[in-house]
Length: 633
Ligand code: CO
Image (cartoon, rainbow, N blue to C red; front, side):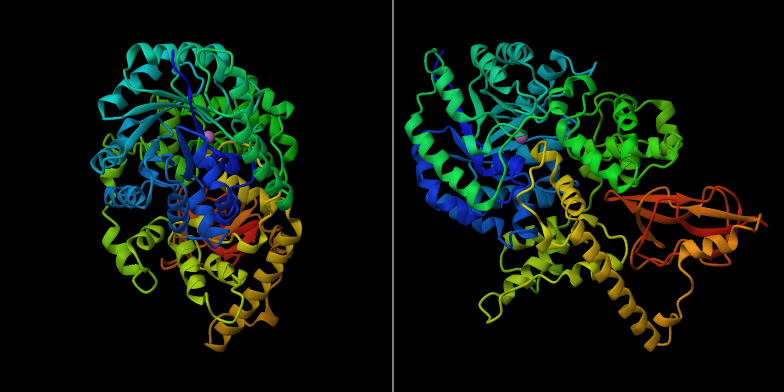
């Protein structure tokens, strides 16, 4: 067998897994020539969360970063992670955007595209694979690895064969949760090598500590390429360290041929950076090592903990952990990776908190059941599907076939700021964050040091539910990049944001104060226009009013099932679902409570007349807070 090849993930997955993706382009530039000299198979430097984090938190143009890296790295192929039809975002985009994005990425310097779909639904990779081939670049298609009764060796081999038939130049085993054990790794690599004639690459995460052994067994089984990171960005939820792997393989026939001296020079650069910026090392926690028992990946656990804390129900985390495997089974055993990790975990949380399973299902869960994310490994259980979407049909076409082209619209909408096709793409993917970034960019060169105003974010939030809710209410200047976050790239960008807000209690309360200030201003302004009541003459707070009405037996209190934000209408421009005096029927939608980034429709449980709406649009609500009163008469 020949030398094993290595992809270095330090500039993408490495810092994404351990440093919340906060490495800047200027942190990278000084070491690029050395990285280029090592003799790596490729450098993974772009895609995943790096794109989003660049514009959202670092005030950097991701396309500029790619061009800067490309001009410094002259010999080594550059690689990116592409989330299939979701590109570097979180929802499916139409084919015209996929085509443009791939084409511009290739133009700006990407040689190898690693593409994956959370459900291993190969239809979601059709467009991207086709375009990657058309622009003459290397298309690496991923088989997402997970454990379930339906994820057999045969399933993985079949998926890989289909991907090869679709034109994949190589296959990646993508083990985002560190679930691939050494002997399964040997078996899987052998099975793929026996059935396919294209190179096989293994991407795993250290998490519970098995990954070094997993890579060595894969090497024995003949894997062609493996992923590692420079040691300051290895271990924990990241990849295994290149230095250890190189050393371990030195006396074998799979020797990497890489120079340890060079690798430690590079490690030294990143270690200085790590200390300087206060970034953390990768560590393995006991709960990470128990991932095989509960099958809930590490990143998802910390996310759940923070969600449960937010819901003031931390003590029920064990119930949620026990619920997850049930929900996952009922939903057709999706691999737990963005966005399915979030879909499964929020439903498990709601099932526990509501005291009745599937009583409340967020829009994303319904869309999943409708087939809008693709086909689950096995169909959603009939009984559960009926509970969630009733008799609604499940789509059988490729989900992106249902999405209208978007390029022209994005071009027009961003015309004021966009300076290039790349800008239009940035806008198409993350409209609100992009506009803020472009506006900031316009200020460059002026006397003032540019500052992103938190008020802008609150402003956006108060407009109500928006198509991309992730783009709102996350204060740009309040991140704490030094926190160590768990889990894989594809699962934890949002988790990271959530966690940042939770950990940074000062910021949260500050945000609340600012929100309230803003609301007062809003009311005053409205009042000036002759509308809503004046700030000073506000009615009693909701919890006080709750007491005032609870005597009345005819009144049904509609309470918030969770901590979140109340929205009276489906979108900022739409009329409210209900108004005082409206007659409603059981099952009718009354409002939305946004929690954990998902929109939850709250429905009437009985017929009646809306007697009062106690919460203003876009106002935070507590668990159990009365939002609406319905008179049963
Ligand atoms: Co990864």
